Image (cartoon, rainbow, N blue to C red; front, side, top):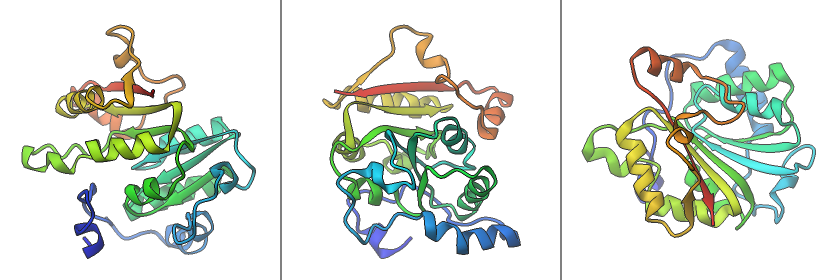
Length: 232
């Protein structure tokens, strides 16, 4: 962890940055393709973030911690008029997604390979239509719960960048993190839970593509919750 991360008002929300060695093509993609897609946080954000994409987008979604990228690439191909910003500090996961982008020819994705709070602080107010936080690291030990991405500070960040009526979607198979998120959003004035009945939060989002992590959770007997909150 860098000194910059240690000195932030929130702790780093991710663990290791790299796993097994990359394959040659993956390494090439990171060297040649990622720089073209990476957000330039050293420059001011555009007043209209829809212009960040090769073709101006109708709406913009931010996915924090996209893992292997299955969900993000599925949504991007499914919704070509929507611009997607994907954030993932884990090198191997970023390499997988960049490979998917090259294979599928998706032109509506921009990326950041470091702390998501940097992007949230860079984005203009009321600029994002939806934030997805799907199966984030649960930091299961109680002493590490302060490192969970859902926090009062980060919900303030979400509230600043989300448009009124925008949505924050959270999925997890860890009961303590689901309850944690419900409690934090309940206590935050900017968010309201959209569930109308008990089945709402047990039903995947429309068009949901199951991921490998989700399949593993089900094999191990864990059920998932799919929460949606509206920016009021």
